[in-house]
Structure formats: C-alpha cells, structure tokens
Image (cartoon, rainbow, N blue to C red; front, side, top):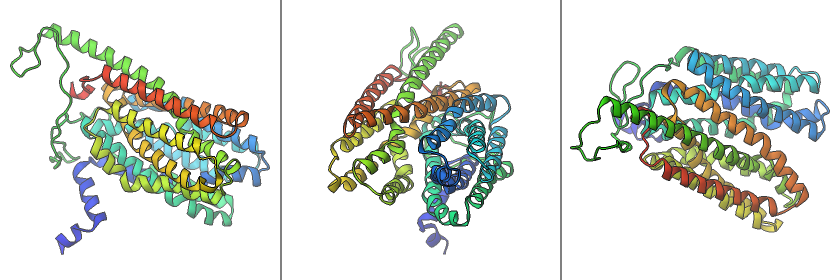
Length: 456
C-alpha cells in the first residue's frame, strides 16, 4: 500500500518537497498560499467596491490603489532593515498580522478618505513581509537551490490567486464588509502559522553550495549534490587544484575586491529591475484597458486569460526553476525579458478584434513563461550578492525599486495609450524589454565566475 500511495502525484510532490527543502521554506509556502488566497478574495474587486459602494470616480479609484505601491517603497526598505536587526520571524508575524487587521477594517470604511488612509497603512505594513521572507530563504537554502525555493513560493502565490477571485465573487453577494472580514482573517492566519511553526533564521549559516543540507533537528537531508560556481581568480595564483593558497593579506584584499564587485552588480541590477518592473506591470494594469477599449474583449474573457497565468505557474514553475537553477542567473533573467518582449510584439500586431482572443492568450502564455524565468532568479541573484548580515536590506531595496517601477509604469503607459492608441505603446515596451535583456547579459558577463557570498 505504501509504494502505491507514493505514486500519487500530490503525495510524491509533497515527499520531494520535504526532502529538498528546509522546514522554513515549506512553512512560508503554506502561509503564502493561505494569505494570498485571502488577498485574492477581495483585491480584484477593490476598484469596483470603491466606485459602486463609495462613489469614487475611476481616477480616484486608481489613485487609491496607487497609494499602496508608493507606500511599499518605504515599507520594503524598512522591512528589510528590521529583518536584519530584530529577526525575520518577528517582521513577518507583525507584517501579516497587522495586514489582516487593516484589511478587515477596510470593509467598515465609510467614505473614500477612510479607505485611502487604510490603503496607505496597508502599503506601509504588508510589503515589509517580502524582504524578510526572501532573506529567510537565503538563510537556509544553498545558493544553487534558491531559484527552486523561490519558485515554490511563486507556486503558492499562484494557487491562492487562482482560487481567490472566483470564490470572492460569490462571497461578494454577502456584502463587501463580510468579504473584507473573511479576507482579513485569512491573511492574519499566516501570522498564527508563522508564530507556531516558523523558526528564526537570522544568524543561521547557509549550507555551502553542493554540501548536504540539514533539517531543523540536525539530520542530513537527502538532496542532490550540485556543483557550485568556480572560485574567483586570485592574483598570482593558478586556478588548478595544485595552485598555492594565497596568504592572509591576499585573501583580505581579494575579499574586499569581491565585495565591491558585488555592490556594483547589485546597484546595476536595481536600475535594470526598476525599469523592467515598470514595463512588466503594464500587462496587469494597462493591457486590460487596451483589450477592452481597442479590441472589444469582455471583462469575463480577460478574467479567464488572467487565470491562465496562475494555472501555468502552478503546473510548470517548479519544473522550470529546477531546469535552470544551475544556469547563470543574469542570463536566465535576460531570457525571461526576451519572452516579455516577444509577447509585447504579439500584442502590438494583434489589432484585429476577430483574432484578439487567440493572440492575447498566446501573449499571456509567453508572458507567464518569462515571469517563471525572471522572478525566482531575481530574488536568488540578490541573495547571492547580498552580504550575509544585510540580506534583508538588499531584498528590501529590490522591493523598493519594484515599487517605483509599478508606481511609474501604469501612469506613463496609460498616457502613451491615450495619446497614441493601438500598437505604439507595446512596440516601445518591447524595445525597453530588449534593452533590459541586453543590460542583463552585460551584467552576467561582468559577474561571470563571481561566487555567491556564502560560496566564497
């Protein structure tokens, strides 16, 4: 009976996850699934609530939602700094706990001013979770398996966002106050999960790349040994196995040089990520407008296409992350942005409503493939170049850069679409993606052979 049960795909997948990942990653994935399901119950309908229940105009509703992105810039940086000072676990518990309370209160807001104030508070507490969680993953997962670990979190997020909107649409018939309350309870439940089962990882040594990982009881986990990055060149030494070990002074000098290279690589990547994120967010924020106004697509059809994104992530994210986890991260991210550019090219030529649905379905599929390559590698790349004692801060800076991109991208994209409806916006976006991909290739070449901090 045992071998038969082990052949059931969910059981086999669960056993593989327990084998390959530290408990911290599994608890974070479970909590992400619950919390994102709670978010997805209500936030796809937030602008509808603002317009229909609180009498907001479309512009006012857009401004309220933009407040979250603006506040996330501060919250991400602060959350990362606190995660390095007081611990990952405390930041995550406080972040999701307060987020649940704020969401529940949003259903009791009596006017637009109150909902705007609560949205700002949510933007100041909720994003702080992200850098703390990413730093916790880097604390316990070796460098060569981080893309797969971050991919697992993406799968958990996607599962929540697939199920949430459909159930939320049904619960909305009970009233938005009930919907917000249920959403807040589910988001807050993550705080209970983290308090009960999530260990503190700050100061916990990451296993070396290719070395056996250990679980929370100190037992060796059965994981495949993966060859890590080659060691950096040391002045005056050969790279073969018989080279003389450098003396203490050379080692200190080389360590300082590597630290400067990592800092420069991180700064360059932040600039690339900011621009890329602003363009990526257009498919969520501006593409639906283009699909509805220029191509005549119904809201229901776009909702189905949007769900396709989550379904593909659930089915293929872990497989893709596993396939590319040994590849140079900058090059993999460049490949992801090339796919985004190809998708924007399809949108640019899909101007005939007769075949718009098929074209946009192909574009969403390609976008999702690009997303599955880009996002897990993005977090893993930052983990690799982050000093161990500043992992939270570096992830917070990345989240802040993404917040700037998402705050600037939609207004700029909307202005271009209003000024020149049709293809120009998507052609320009494809060109920006190509430029960012080229910049990532250059960054990958500049950092070739640069070891991760914990692999040095």
